[in-house]
Length: 81
Image (cartoon, rainbow, N blue to C red; front, side, top):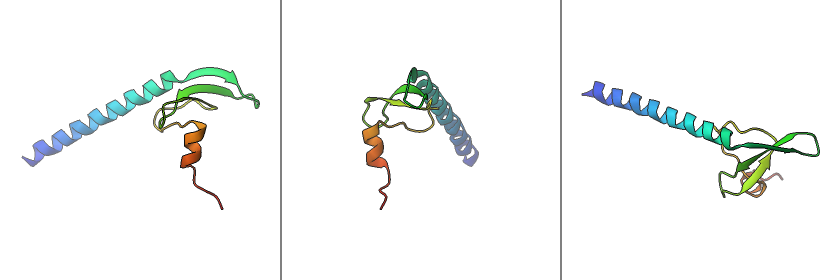
């Protein structure tokens, strides 16, 4: 009985990992290469993970971490004193 529970758990873990990989692939495919900023970096258009607005970032998201627009990033950023 315990072996069956363990096997199901391992299968569930594999399914979750596959879903995460698919989600990561979707995010990196959604990131469109755009113009260059004033420093010559290529900007990528992405959708903010928190509010859903379009934003431009100077890196191509891998999909394993959330990407925020400027406003949402400022809200989450730790305050410095």
